[in-house]
Length: 351
Image (tube, rainbow, N blue to C red):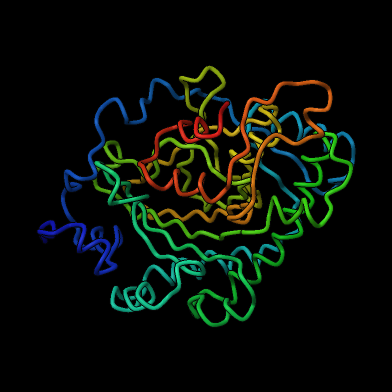
């Protein structure tokens, strides 16, 4: 039986072993750096049984009834699943296989990628923000910024590049449709090129990798947080582990994997731009004792130099703005400067 490395951060981060390398040591229990305090763990008594987020058939996305369903889900839940979204099953399956292949690469290859990739295009990391956290999260991740094809060809890892690019090309059409519906319900007549750039000008595809864990009850796969995106489009595998905050602010609701579905959630950017009409909801991920889980979010973000605030169309009826105008790069840096802490990031933008 192997023991925990003496310098854990060096092992995880500098040597690019990540949690995958730790799990491969077959430790009988997690290192203390991963043990969440009792009050931070998911309390099974707070999970609401037989309740889940809406599932919406997206095949007739321009049907007013379908658009109303999306609007209702975005305002009441902040989360919903879409089926019949036109991303082919083969594209999805090929991407999932490529994600497993990437994380199963030797640590030396991942270290080489980490050291030779510009962070504005490719970023390999573990936990969330390991130098800012007192307790680490049981997760490794690779972020691929949807940049120019030239940069993608130069820097995205060859083992998953073609599959990731194919998936993003299909997902882009879905994202555009979703944003068109969400903005229409905010009295924005048209998703023109300028608005489109504001909402989805800096998209990131992330590969989240949660190895099987000897003590899943005491760790966080991902701690409670809301996303700082416009929207997030999440592809789950069939293992499950995602929970979203219930409307009472205290309970948690399980989001089951649904075959062929994508999970959509509202991010802080759209909560701010809608002046609070759309809800960016806390969510968290738990680890699994016997199986490795992957999840693949696309974070649909504004470009860093974008100023975000309530839309003029939302305020035209005389509503008072709840949020100030904020430079997105400042909001982004603030989010990553601290551990996951629920909904506290949005206070940065509140008036």
